[in-house]
Length: 252
Image 1: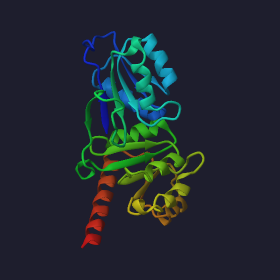
Image 2 (image 1 turned 90 degrees about the horizontal axis):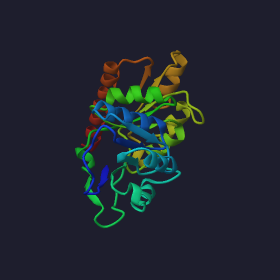
Image 3 (image 1 turned 60 degrees about the vertical axis):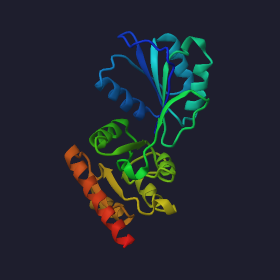
């Protein structure tokens, strides 16, 4: 879900002006920044929190901010209010990116809010891996077909798996700090709204014991790295089809 908070007097873009991406998750910052560069944006700055972002705004000629809604140090809404209270950075476009519907902070500030019904959206895949490069690689293979969400540890994955916007599939790494994938897997099926979410392990572990353990914990597939993008998309598509068939049979 995206909400755009726009100022009507923003001037046209030129090469000296920059986009600012703010997110407290490094992998998401990198993914968004790379997507902007692929679209032809010359200058893209990033910030992990609101304090860093304000320093960037005062040192660079930023005209568009893309901010996550839910962050620890300073939420997207708090950052928006700070910008609108500062005359030096008032005249820019602010784009809020959130998993849930956003209510405008002030009357007249929201230029557009779009939220398609879930049944009309693309299926959502939650990718869980400790390494930013792996998250970027896996999400890049799937983003054209699916809505991809990212988590870099087991705790964050469980939070996202039990939210109102639950994923349709989880790609789960095995080796992570804190809770590893084998600890996370059984928990993803505990809440009532998560019982039908399939889990696919994507791991560098190649032993038969690891494969058996993952499948025994309820995973529907076990993919060994490195995995090519076409193979990954095929395995995910087959899993989605199988789960949909099961749901249809249960509904009969």
